[in-house]
Image (cartoon, rainbow, N blue to C red):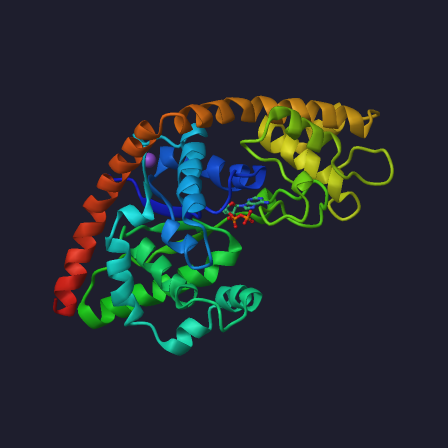
Length: 330
Ligand code: ADP
Ligand code: NA
């Protein structure tokens, strides 16, 4: 009985993953590779839909790969590769572009949001068609499930529509994938602004816990996290968002239920929790940071691992593309 295939991707868009990416993506991926035939990709083609710097992009692609590998993504248990290494993505994207209505593409809300930020005249056509490339990224591998955040639901919906449309016009070809929507409860908030989620586009870097930061910086940021009025260490997202965020991180990293942590800190002060949490975060992240630095110091080995991943990916992607090309008349 072959294991079900799932597929997920991450953009190489920051110099380090933050704790939100770690708990919300990497840790989940690490678990899913044990259960599923998992395909994970670093979507560098998507990174050029907005203005970018070539040197920075190349470095971020490597750094992103290094962190996922260091965090336990195992190339013997899954397929990890860089999107641009597999030309079938853009080849299938063209076919799917020609099956997508202009109005249909115009309804993608992420384009509206992102192009508003840039000004709609300067936003690229690539940004406009990126959900169609994303559909190609998914459909090439015939996955049953696509683990994504709620913000990506509409794009998975488009992939489903395109899969069904292609199957209807040209005969059964694609698996119609399902979105596996991430739990909202897995969200980590900004340390300085606990009303907002921890994000690389944070207003202040002090709100972020980065995988690759010096442990001293990480400890300092946790100790200066915004807490709330009062002294009680209690989980209450509405009244005590700062303390609740610290408790959520503590729980996620220790595996202890929130109630057990509350009981442990009854009568203690915020400072006690912060000191212990800083130790916990540092001891979890330090070995990952060290391993990522080792990988980055040996770019030939890193490139070799990614080349193996691209080879494995192409073996699947080429079969799908060959069938698609034949069916459309190429
Ligand atoms: P960012 O918000 O920093 O730009 P991305 O949108 O690139 O992060 O997200 C990459 C992955 O990390 C996605 O799977 C997303 O759901 C997850 N993720 C991002 N921020 C958080 C967070 N604060 N808490 C939990 N998961 C997160
Ligand atoms: Na696997």
